[in-house]
Length: 105
View 1 (cartoon, rainbow, N blue to C red):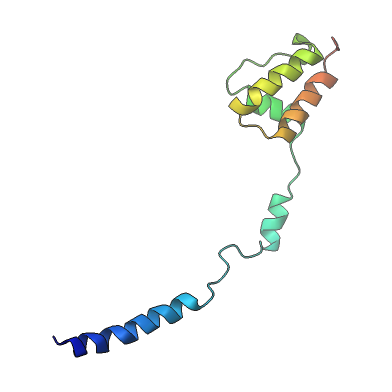
View 2 (cartoon, one colour; view 1 turned 30 degrees about the horizontal axis):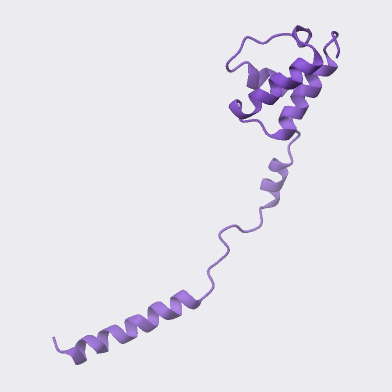
């Protein structure tokens, strides 16, 4: 094959690739459909539900009266990372435990 033949074949191919790369690609994350938006707007779980679901995976559930408010705050703070809880989930669980703790502060 001569250099002229190779050049004749490669130049159009290179132009095709360059044109294809310069065009904008479609958005890989288009706006969510109304059905997806409605599903993501589902009601959030209560602190009691999150406490029961998350803590029971590894522990026998203790009643909220088992620890004082300060102790529950410390316990949930330490377990947040291990249980992969968001800050809001941890706050909801802590609020539930403290509001149902008759022992108080």
